[in-house]
Length: 197
Picture 1 (cartoon, rainbow, N blue to C red):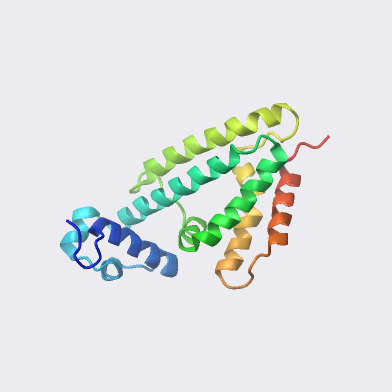
Picture 2: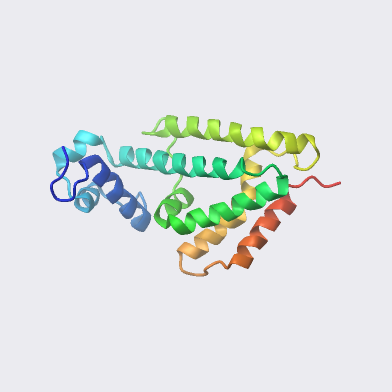
């Protein structure tokens, strides 16, 4: 049943409210009462949709991660050239963070739900499928001697670690990245990941 107040159903309002609260206060500092207050739903309505704060977080994290990964892969497969692909993903990441600061803050600052936690199994499966698709793009460039053979974790750290740190500074209000700096981050990622002769 939709709310007469704003036309959005209770589940949507809870998810939207949770994004605001988690992004602003962090998951651990957010209470169930503050989630209900932010979304304007009753206790009964909350428990109709979610079993706990952790359940809300697991669902929200999974939805944000899914959207980010789909856009990441859509950007990546547009590039046949290894250097262009590496640099384009850094630019995409920074652009996405700027367009979705609350969502980006959650992905950057909160650990993903573990497999035994609500949403954890789905997040783990999404990551597995995502890394397989990234590997499918990476492998031909590696075989052609353009990209280094690196473990998925190291690949992520070298590719987006500096961009993630720039986002943390950005979200903290310490520094707003310039277009030139974003280009520099892309170039640094390429230098870290390219095959050296």
